Image 1 (cartoon, rainbow, N blue to C red):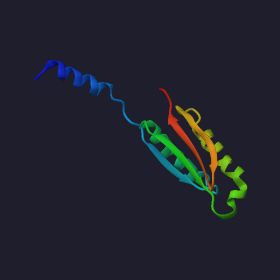
Image 2: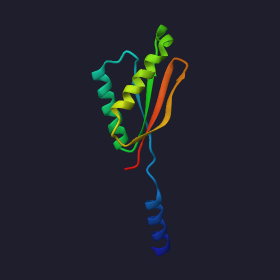
Image 3: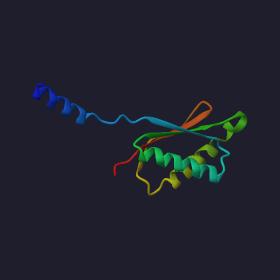
Image 4: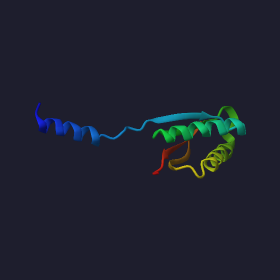
Length: 108
């Protein structure tokens, strides 16, 4: 076996980064506190594994009138993630009948 080829393959293998995937969590504006804590626990697990977490909030029917309820849910999520290494890659924004936010793992 060619030593140069072997050395190149080792270098290539060590330089390849782990591709991060985006895991999605779906919630509703009327979510209870316990269910929200459970979803945040899942988000923390995703971030620990090195994946990004996309939190999607769905509005049904006339709930879209009260978009501020969705913002309050996202503020609760941010408050529950305080002290955990993360960064908000995309702030919550309304797109049609859904509101979404992307959370990326932070530097440890």
